[in-house]
Image 1 (spheres, chains in turn blue, purple):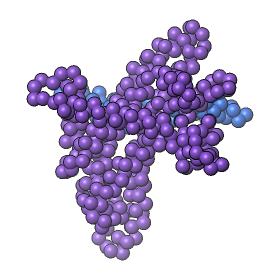
Image 2: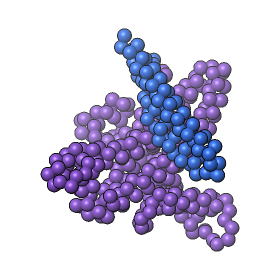
Image 3: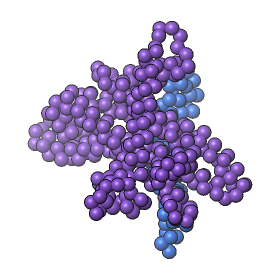
Length: 78
Length: 287
């Protein structure tokens, strides 16, 4: 029972991290493309900013992924 | 692997995530811990020898390499390594000029140091996970975690350094009163003195949280990204124990993840530098 709960915890962590980063990077990418479509000459500047913000958006979910993998393989696995 | 223990998946992962810890045993003697339980029993006064060694080594490598380039610098066309160093220095300089608007000679060297140092520490992640620990094992060292940035102690150490600089420049530029006012007089502002006093606790709470969350998020972001990357490398390395087909798949996966990871490695070093500049810029500007 407890082991099953740990697996569920890891799965929830992974899944919610995926949902969150999907929405976040999706919105970010959409705006990025809109921005380039409107002003293609700003592409180099926008690309840098895009990667910075993507790194910021990415950070918390990737921590969640790390903890989920740790739970599923190191805490539970045998 | 730890001597005598049977090789299991969990044991393999835990072995890779264990730092070489030096500290005081509960019985009062000093030495290296053999395993996670002993390292935990050492409590606060323990030091991760491998993290210290690799971070100091890579820091020294950065200083040595960049000094060598600086000494050889000429006014002619640079080539090879010299060109590379010049490109990095220009890149950092451009970024500092872009986001830091005050006069402070410390910021650009600090940004350069943080960027290159974090980058070098992150790049250790691309060395296959078993190479250096196995060599260390041959030399009789039980644990070896080669990526300093996957140890929260290293990232928190750097973030605390930045935090202390932020406080120092906040007080130096704005004075103790100015800094205190910044912490207590906004975001809720009022002309009425009684209302002003009433707003102090709420303002202080909000500003204090945002002040403390800066170093915490700065360090956890770097640690989390590199820890996740390392974790996935370790899981991929597990495939090599599962026969020829899985080993080939593992090789392909390791290459693919390493290529993808280069992006994260560069990006996180860059973000660490950028956020440091931004925090110090905030410390210098008046409200």
